[in-house]
Length: 259
Image (cartoon, rainbow, N blue to C red; front, side):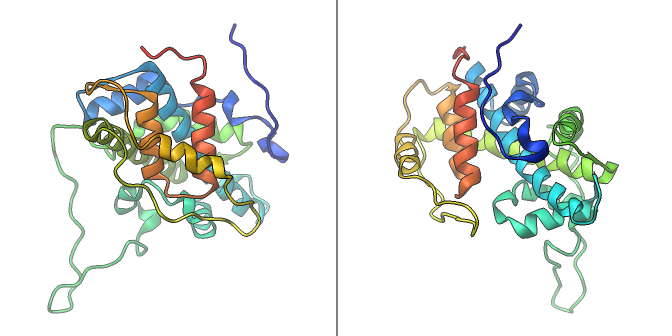
């Protein structure tokens, strides 16, 4: 029997800690990493990546849930996703999915040729190597579990969007973690710090934490936990979401071996 750490959370359905819900299994995380790199992925790195993805998806779902609650609904629709992103730019992640989803049509820009005719969007590549978009269905069970933990359900189109965003986000996280290993640390951080009007500013210790991740230790063949944390600072450019993702990932890996 596993021991779970209890810690205070926000009110309402959110009182069940996101740390109690592990929707994305480390085996799935490692499969995504294998799609983009041949490097070994440590167990703690897989747990950290799963935790970060869970934190991001939870924030998106909570934003969509608030939009649905304003209309007295508990079933989320794609419009709630758009409202969540519109209200909180921090959750605008997994942008490569937007080109593949009807939900985001008209929001990603329309290209015109010199004659003023709309240029059709590119068709999906038939590459033999699985892409984040092609593999999005792998996240369905985890997304549905996460939705239940937040006290809501979602229409199939919304589930598909959350699948796709999770898949693209985790794939980008894996690529950045591999880059951190190759380059020996983080060579670029987001320079924008977002502070929502109803949220406190990030504490000074976060800046120290980011600086600590700028120089990498370890071999050049293994992606470790700190490499995933460093990649998180690239994917999440600032604000409380990044701080929370880093904190929860560290908590999730406290008792995880590095193997």
